[in-house]
Image (cartoon, rainbow, N blue to C red):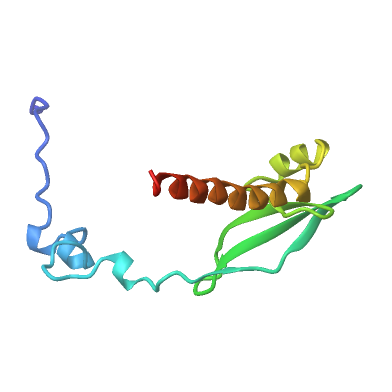
Length: 139
């Protein structure tokens, strides 16, 4: 007669001393004083690439300035400069944001007369203060 089916016997695995996935065997955190992966990696040296013209319109230019890690040659990002004629560049992280801003009017330049006006007010304020001190001395 046949034996009734019972629970199957589990096969005995390899002893723990031969575990191939153990951390100490892989050189991980199990060993005291071991170095991390980040400590082995060379430090980053990020370099900016020369600007490249991406888009051009009537009175404006969009330039892309890329950033690359010199040690691994990995791209680290880019920034886009929108330059209106006669203005300082506006910096954007995304090309679409720079293109949207280019559709608007260029920023207004500050008037040179406004910069000279505060310089004229400063000497005028000092002279009344000097007169006030002379008035108080005789009294």
